[in-house]
Length: 147
Image (cartoon, rainbow, N blue to C red; front, side, top):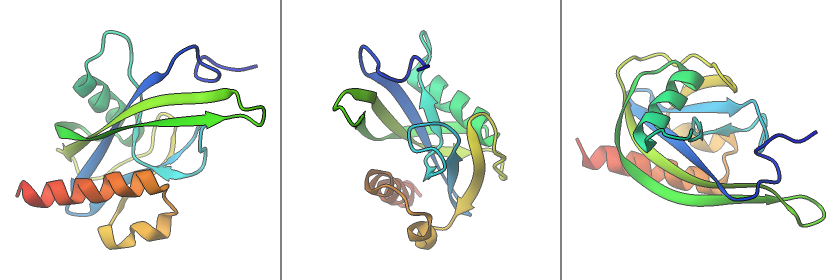
């Protein structure tokens, strides 16, 4: 049985929040497909009637327990995953935002298996997708510029 995210009729909108703080950046280990078990940026599907910023705040609260301030768009990109027959199994348009946290310690929740602070120099240890690493590096640069 498939869910509404698999084999969609149209792309789904996803939002992510890159929380930069004294401890580095918050990463989560994904609990759902696609990429279950992998480390990534916290986020998820935008709900109908929800603003982008409200969606980022909700997803961060659900997956990390953090209350965040949404500072600005880092990047928009898409992810398309095909099955062995070439049919589109997942298709997301993702908007990742730079965020600041008002509380310090992330706690995994929602569909996140783990939530941790990771120092910028330790990112390579987490086997992140190239596009995730690119967004994180942009976020660190943006955070340095805004200080």
